[in-house]
Amino acid sequence: MLVGLGHVDLVCRDLPRSLAFYAAVFGPLGLQEPALFDGEQGERIHYLRFPDVGSGSLGLRQAGTDQAFELYAPGLHHLALTVATAGDVDEAHAAAVAAGAEVLHEPRLWPRYHPDYYATFFLDPDGFRLEVVSARDARLRRRV
Image (cartoon, rainbow, N blue to C red; front, side, top):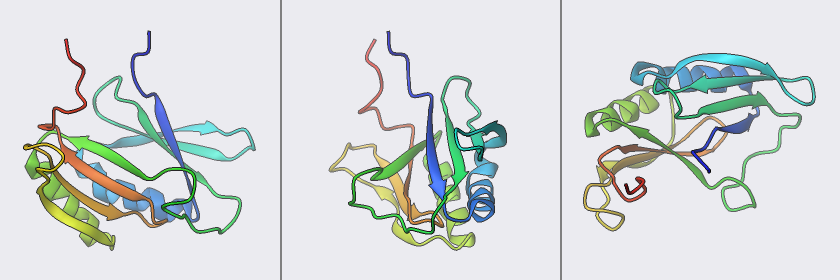
């Protein structure tokens, strides 16, 4: 039986810059220190861990080239991170602004997705689109 998403790895052009960004934006919301592993090419993978056990992790690793990320090329479109409250969405947004992120959408309700869908969207240092959404969104929760 499938039980969840274990981890997602992002390949970064400047790993120290990305580690600092994710720590600044999500550290205050409970993101834990990374667990370090060796990748298949000898690179170090920094797995950023979420506070809830079983919620997976986000791996960051250094790119081998300086090629820029392209949103609509094959690959990742965006990464949505769930936080507990709308206030946490606002806090993540403020931290992203302070960290120099390009904000795509200010925090607000997105009723076209769901009446309680409160989210913000911004870019990380490599141009990966990040969404921070309040856990009030029930669209994708498992039905019991």
